[in-house]
Length: 239
Image (cartoon, rainbow, N blue to C red; front, side, top):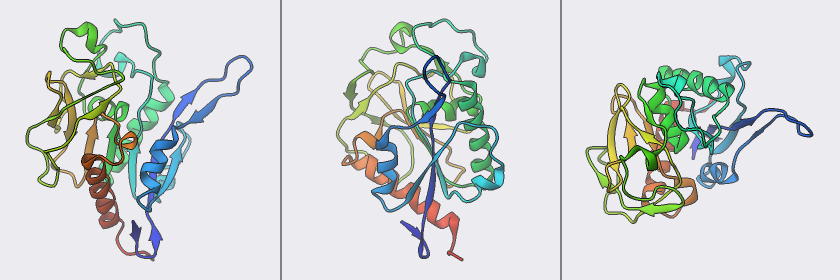
């Protein structure tokens, strides 16, 4: 996918691990996220979790992917107290970086795709809340970790295929209160939100599953296609 003769540049957020004994601090990202973008002809740009980058650096990017994480967003960010202590919390550096990125890309109306933890981040950014742990919440009756399940669709964009195979599932948290301006377009059979969208923006969409791990799935392919199409349209002709 190109803008004129130049490939699209897609920023992908990364995880951050603090320095500890015997190890330097590091940023890291699972390769599948980058391949999901590069296999479609765009260039993945891995973004560090830092507050030091000036906004004009972000302006070169044509779209944003919020990657997933094995870490949880602190309930402090959605006005609740922590009650689930088994998982490690995401670093403040990453949360604040992604909140700033979301604000910038929203203002520029450039496309945003949130995956798993990125889907949850989009909801928190829009002042929504999360269920800290689905199994202990009593709000879920199917397995959502290391599993797969069908999707049930409601509303959503007309381009979205609906007669599709099950999607993968690798999460223990979920949306509780939906964020401002968002609509749920897909749920798991037990009612847990699996897809969100802001229909007012060109492309502001999040999915709870991992399309980058299921690249031959019709939804994975169509979501990527529309994401990059929107990025190309917003980028305009190459100089």
